[in-house]
Image (cartoon, rainbow, N blue to C red; front, side):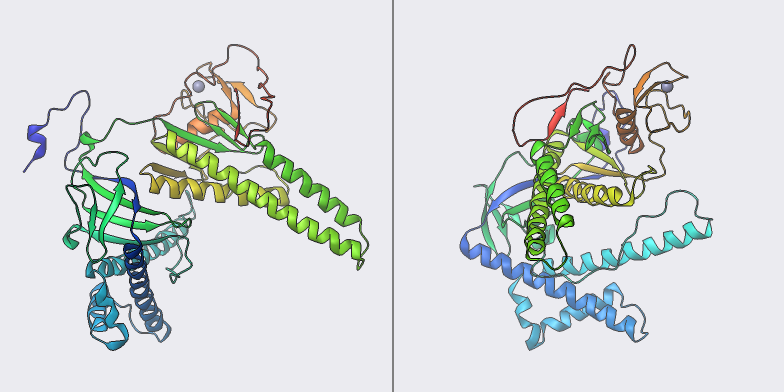
Length: 431
Ligand SMILES: [Zn+2]
């Protein structure tokens, strides 16, 4: 039935042939018995995934053709009839099929990547290099995230009392933080590293039925500030992280002064190792705080892919920053997925600092010490970092504006500093 015939559209065109998938996530509170049933389900899904992966690897190792999706599915049915795998019958058959489907998807992504890479090389390496996708890897009990997916034909359902009925698990308590807009097509049950459970529902919707778009933000990660947002907010590393880094540097200097083989050197080495650990903890803490805030406050975020930022840096500084940045963007990515937000990574060939974010004119590279300039085409005063953040958002197709943050009437106003205090929160400076 053409739904569009009955929907009046105001103000914008909507393509009703295309469905979008929205994710709605809720906290689950399974009872002890349900928790062990879920553990069994996670385990079975893992075993099926790993069995399939091993079969394909073994076939590849002896030169046999790729095991097709249909063959793998048939092998699963056969395995359930054998004593060694009979216990797979204790869980919903759907989650096992979905686990095999995940494996197939992982392989398809890998093949697509290899094809794209070959084509990119054949075309003389023009344009952005395809993003690397590895072969699927074995799942482990120790993985940080355990998940199983129930589709509609597994007959999961939301009961009138609000509990979620999961086949062979039970009726699980849900905290409904917001309403589901329509009947979900699937639900993924997730256990996170903290041992918390979530239900992530997929709801098919027409774009016209999308909830009003919240703010969208482009993020520029840099050296002068940890991050600059397209709305003009500049975020420095928090005080607790800088303090830990300072202590680490002091410990390292002290170590380098100690004589080889001395007891003092051993002691100093232990101190450096401890300081390293504290810096890593503080950095992780900061990344978590900031990524949670950004995902909570925005409908969509975009960051630049940071393989190369083309800046002249020492190799050491670069490696330190890159490590921090990739951990941070990884958090943004998984939190976006967890909370049903959009996440975009922008290819590294987009010249975010060379293009005016107001009028789009590309006026070439500028030396690093140039922090603000006036666009010769439209006369806008641009702040290097904010301009980059807006361009990142635009490259992701997000309609970001700097909301006047980068418009400056005259010469550069120094950034306000010194929000005093020891609050362990990302420090926000007025731009
Ligand atoms: Zn301009």
